[in-house]
Image (cartoon, rainbow, N blue to C red; front, side, top):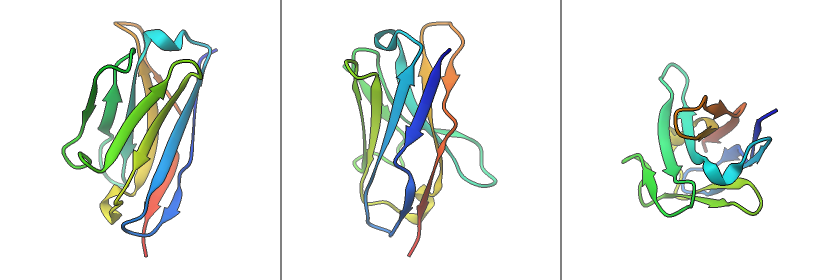
Length: 117
């Protein structure tokens, strides 16, 4: 049974930082490209950042470039999202996403990030 479990969300002031973690189990982690998505109230879910299965390549939404960093640890089956200089518009539920080739992708349950003073 595949599980993706996010943690690290919370309330932070504008300009602050958070580090999200996603623990993966039940899959061969090294085969999967991993991503973080987010969904704000009333908006569609959007891709925030992605990393290839070997960690060699990353991509980011324009809105988070130079502020967020995605990384992975294949030995620990973990993927992280370091979020710096947070803005109120970053407020959303953040989801971990795993995909391998054309196989069925997996989603975590999400973790809430709220940026507010």
